[in-house]
Image (cartoon, rainbow, N blue to C red):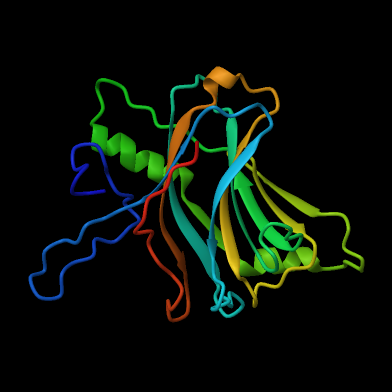
Amino acid sequence: NSRENANTYFKSPNTKTERDSETNAPLKETSLVLDYQNMNPGQEVGVTRLFETDKKNLASYKSLKMEIHYVTKADKVPVRFAMQFGSGSLDGSSDYYEWSFRPVKYECSSSEREQDCHEQNWLNNAFAMNVADFSDLKQGRHPPFVEPVVKNLGGDREEQIKLVGNPSVSSIDWMRFVIIADSNASPADLKGTFWIDDLRLSDMDTEWGYAARTSAQVN
């Protein structure tokens, strides 16, 4: 966070600085931390947030955005990062949407300012997607919805959106962040850190939008 880790943590330039209403002093800025290590090629690990008694309705919002920062010492990025959101039993849920991409790792030369490099990494990995793009994956489908629908968005980040089962953007009761190791990755390379911040919805009152104020680790 921006206090205890003031010399090593730099927030995304897309994230507004929140201030105390009385003193105008900047408030502590904290990202969700996802550390991964000791993974096997092809393995998936993740963390989940549940909305047990307060299902979320995304249908009235135009877009979903999130800030992502990524560090690894691997020469070549060996993972994909995914965000999933859906409904039903978490352990056995077969109804969800997914966005995934190949992240850009943090790099900084001796001639560059560290803060500038961190800010550029946030920008390189920023996520923004229209909610309708997920809903549109349902067009032309017919029951029993056995096969996932996958849409490749292309680009250097290899972005992809997926529909599994028959979820609804108007009834979301869980969200998950997933790290997916490449099947041909070297186990020695499967170590890194993601910072996740400022998950938000736009074009409506932000009753659900939030910036992560907790931390977690995935080993």
